[in-house]
Image (tube, rainbow, N blue to C red; front, side):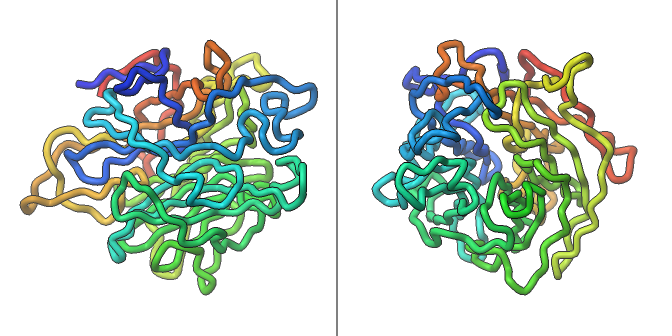
Amino acid sequence: MVLIDNTLPRYDAAGMIMDVHDGQISQWQTGGPYFYYGMGYRNCTETKGLIPPVDCPGIYQPFGGCGFRTDHALNVYTSPDLVQWTHVGDGLPMDKRPDGIYFRPKVVYNRQTQLYVLWINMLTASKPRQWPLGAYPNATYLVATAHDPAGPFAVVNPSAYVRAKGGGDFALLTIGDDAYVAYDAWSNGHRITVEQLDADFFNARRDTPPTAALSPASHEAPVLFARHGWVYLLYGHTCCFCSGGAGARALVSPYPRPGNVWNWSDTGVELNPIRPWSISEHAIPSQNNFVFTHVPGAAVEEEDEQAGGGTRTQRPHAHARAADPTFVFTADLWGSAADRLKSHDRQFWAPLAFDDSASPPTIAPLEWLDNFTL
């Protein structure tokens, strides 16, 4: 049994508060260590602005404001149990990457190339003293690879091809040998769409059309994960380090078939609804991050999907199966640090509850948990 506590910061083995945000957790092999990838925002002090978005005034300042610095680290941690974490280091060292502001790293494994593939949102200034807000229309995704899941990752594509320009938040998912990206963009009004990636996972495929817009305008923070033959997409409204949280609307589709055929439907469930009698405060004051899987017991028989967007299971002997994994929702609690350092903002984790009597299965709305056990 592992106790997960949402009320306190997480500390690594050196006694330091973990500076790891808007990334992912993956256990690449059942029984192996967990890998925690996330942005390190360094020790900058959060401030409030006078005009929206009030929680991230750095968006209106030259590059270097809190949350918009060019020295963000891709921090990588490992753990045997989701509690004891060891800091491995910066998985994308500054001297090995283009200068820019980096956000929301995601990693998948390509079993054909046997490489771990990192996508990360990158924002670069096209002119001196440009505000991040002015640079966002040219935002892109940098792609890097590593033979080891801990990195370091080496850049292979500084600007991945996707159809909509000015890429925003995104999520990756592999199913078998195929990979998909869900993202929003400045050029499409921050509407979530999904595209299939090419064979090496370095770009979206040019010969396969994307889905139509799956969200209204002004939505971001998509999360993709697969469970029991269904793919789930979560997203919320645009939220620039918002302290009140954002939504987590749940869509679902059968597994995509060759040709990128998707058949999305809205489950009608808002996992993170606005609190009663509030205009903007959500039940969980958080922004969607990732859904990872915790597999109890021994090894399981290999399945097609990398469950939760990341798990590559082992099969030591045929038909060996453990209990179903727990799908754990993670989200950033922006503005939660007692000392107001962005690097110390906490995260909220919670197990998802599925109703398998429905077809497709639905997910119960989230409730605040001070702690829970896995």
